[in-house]
Length: 113
Image (tube, rainbow, N blue to C red; front, side, top):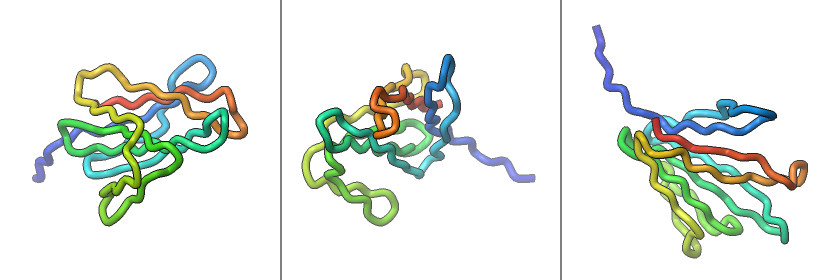
């Protein structure tokens, strides 16, 4: 019998219509990216990662000013515009992702569970 150690993931949800829908899960050691378009042109890139079972991080880089190397290591070309660290029990971190098809944007939230 194998007894594994459960490490909490980072959950990503998007608001559709009148409720939140699961948009994905980022397991410990994993990472992902969402791109949001700005009103005046350009983008904000949101990189998120579940560092380990105790915390996750969401960073915003204006204009894609970063590079991901090796196993999710981030090399910034300029300083990020914001960073949020999440731990179990913290309130969800919410952002607005805009696209050419949806300039008003969609609410997206991150929760370390």
